[in-house]
Image (cartoon, rainbow, N blue to C red):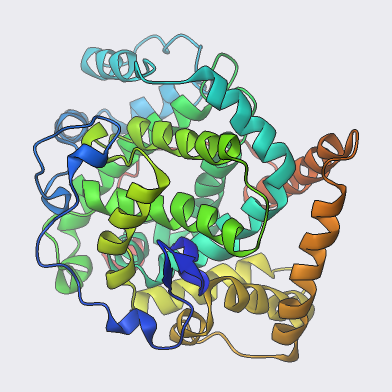
Length: 404
């Protein structure tokens, strides 16, 4: 999931964009973030680098052992909305798990969720850029994430993998994201099952094991690293871009991502209660680990080529330039992204675009117009990525066949 200030700006309050700055931060030897700063307010304080998702992992292991994964994928394909009944015929233990874990947490704030959609209406353009060319590209310099993607089934079909990731980014911005008619709860639970399937399969890959620093992929800390590359990075970037963020917008955006982390299986004691706490945690788990890997460099090239599929001569330099502008020279150089005259054009034109857009945002009907235009672009991206088919998050049944 990328570092929100990753691009070279303020992630957790640090100037990550400065050349060389990222390489100067030594990884923490011990987990020091305190659960008092979480939405739970208390906890064991255990290091999340050594915690995964025991309940879901045990369940998915049983599905594999009973030969039920393909059946489950078939049955869950039509389960898409939060308020939809579970499909008939699911294994009883899976049905019980989904029913129990689809319930909204007691701390959910519906007023904040309503405010969050209002925020997305006005800021969706910026968030789309930050999620895609910020966080998406930042994931390529998160070593554990890059290796897990590259050697798992997703690495064999990156267009499909990106489509499934984009679905989560689309669903979170829906007016009813976590409510009736929305899809975010289902999307998160399917993603949680997929993570467990990757944890079951990837340790069987000799290629992954030869470079992995961990015994199992996608720990609680790894999920929060991705969370910060999306939520914390984006919030800090909006601030750096001098986009007005009233306290209500800031709190609503945080709440949206807090609920997302919860439904992805992160324990509440690791979910920050405030942006200040999020920045403290991000400085420990995200900032120090960013670095290039052979797998990440290859993934970055695949991602940019996919995004520029129709016109590499024009589109790819623009995407390269936006990536460099959003993440900074250090990360762009790590990913071997070429410099071009487009870099300077984007650096000069994007702030001007923001000033123009922000100057109109409070006029009558303008937020609705922004939303319609952004929605058209989002749907177009999803249509392209999945070639007009419905995007279905499924449990993988193997690793990348190119690295068996």
